Length: 193
Image 1 (spheres, rainbow, N blue to C red):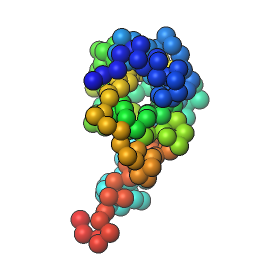
Image 2 (image 1 turned 60 degrees about the horizontal axis):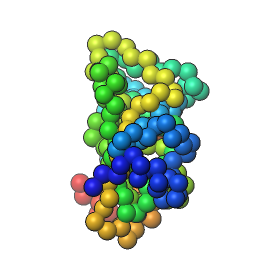
Image 3 (image 1 turned 180 degrees about the vertical axis):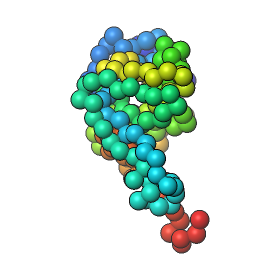
Image 4 (image 1 turned 45 degrees about the vertical axis):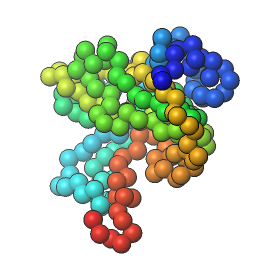
């Protein structure tokens, strides 16, 4: 079941869902819009990106902060961004990131595959949502920090997770900047791939 906008508003008032800063005008019939932050992780050309080589992954990206200035997303460019709002999701809800049609109609996607926000995310302190922003427009597109960039929908689980994402030590727990991939932590302890 998807929460209605009224229920989202009620859960925010009760402190069950945390969204900081909160602007009531961002709540719609079944979602809350989130705005773009000013930190971006850009990808750089390197010889090779090896998912099991932490150094190759770290050398492949660079973190920049536009300090509120627009970011120009080039055609075909993928960047990681974050929302201006920081959120915390309780253990009995799951959130889902969806693109806004106004952004998609410019050829910009705001998440490629990881649109899932786990129950218990932000339980140790609200965190921004990381976005995978891709420009499929043949022209550069200017993105403004503070613009409404995506929507967050909330789904009720059949029962609360006994331990949420942060409690389980999720590898991206507590990250406040757009983090690069940490897939190298998936290596089995035996060293086998």
